[in-house]
Image 1 (cartoon, rainbow, N blue to C red):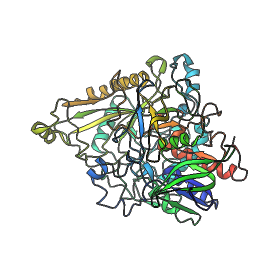
Image 2: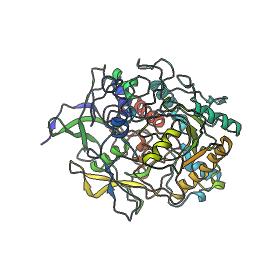
Image 3: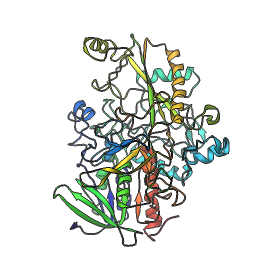
Image 4: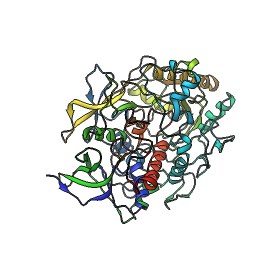
Length: 589
């Protein structure tokens, strides 16, 4: 029989970005809150202190800050006819493990989706007609608009401390910003970062080619800054250790630098680490949750934590798995198209071309996670889907994120892969290259889904979650088009050598190389309970006291990195609970 803890008003599953946001916003209401985190406790000091954290082998290669397959993994197949096999070595995506979640090891790219991405199906229908949408593509409109979310994007920008320059400020297009972005009510809290040589070189070429370059919006402090919770950030020193690392400089936006120390001051908030939530417990009629059961690593026993409100704020894959094993929502069946939980899984499509210059030195060790000049001229609202033959968009960018020698050693095509010739190539080319990359949207499809695996189980005896995913012609056609646009830069810049790393037509999804940790969908938002798992306020259909936050809410994946939308949706949800739900617990409309 499980041990039972004292009842709380709110239990939060996972203490990353969304868990921290929900925690501090609801703590301000005086609610008794406990957060449960599967991994270790993590602070800027001592866990991320200098120089311990900048250990490329430990953190960049061996993934010390990540979730490991022995703790939790998925099985993967490309289509419904394949037998899924476990994802045993971290590669394609890297979920986090510990307090702060993926917000501790991300790069800091912080975007707002374009307005059309919130009503994508209607946008296509009204402009080209629905006949251009492939039959198996299950894209839909969000039940919430950009205009409704704009104040919450602004709130997240201020809390996270985003550096940038608005290109569309209250409808006014400003030179130097992104002219294709959705209108912002306020400029970024901090100015943009200075450009490194490669990003400046790309920007000059982009202007010469008639494009509209701007500095990438970054969750990296460019100046000293204090956020609305009183948390202080220090200016980045371009150390080049952002992705896969905690920030020792208090510069990178993370739950640690932006929220957690303020949240811990509330006497009505507490958290427990090494507490893996196994299932959400439901009332006898199944219409509400009574709390959660978790596994206490210290005592090696199951514990029941009763609560009036359950906030699911774990990583997207873990949220969906927890829903499936808890019987929340009808499981999605890709063969019939029926059900909702696990529906519309999506990922991100990326590629890049590296240009080598014998006589130019780029100093790759100087950089940060969101250091780039960007063009959005091939974004969702700029592409003619009918003429181009695909639905989607992408930004192109160039900049130095790091120069770490083990995992960031680009070499021209044809260079030996080992031995003396490989060493000679490194000596000749290290520090003499720049990369122009794509970062594109991925649509949702009928067969792209998440369900429970019929064969494999985790250490607790629960079925592993099964991922069914492959690249579709739509996204591969978009990548081929974008590769052609990069070739214009290659022709203009005239490098001495080139290495191309794009997905070619006919390519299949490969879990081995890292691509992005931008897993989305599975508990998508919807106007009605028969088409999704949660409503516009991230409230689970049919279980009004359960709220699910994170990228699992995405109806299809945007062309941008997900954190900005994840943060805005979390603040939107917190606001709805504070202003509508607490005074009258019910399904929100």
